[in-house]
Image (cartoon, rainbow, N blue to C red; front, side, top):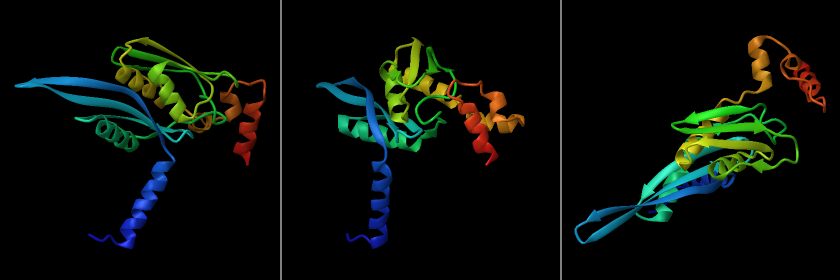
Length: 193
């Protein structure tokens, strides 16, 4: 069946949009169903997708074959993207804590050169988000699903100082503590412009 030029253009646009995202397989789980004559194996995949510029999502997919499970998980992750405000495009604006079930994750902003100090699932989320400097600590559950969801909960609590200042009818410099590099004054100057 021949496809119209418009359909082909739509596919090309989708491929370009998808190419900006990178994905990372966090966990794969093999499950067995016992049936007459043996076992049937299935696979569940947990994937994190991000553009490394402040957008990230996670997805879960199940199938009989590993590649199909990963494909389903990747599609689910692209459907559930969130945007997280980053300071200077490299770290978080403030420390935050996230919970999901028994999983608890603490994310702390860090000075330049620190790197991503995080374990397993939290590290994957931070790398796909594009954070270069962060310290993360996972407490409680080590289940990768709970850890990823707790990390997302912590990221959703992140707020941009400009948004907080606007909501409270204050200047950014009144909200942001003075940093050694004077970035609070720079934020105010950009607000005035």
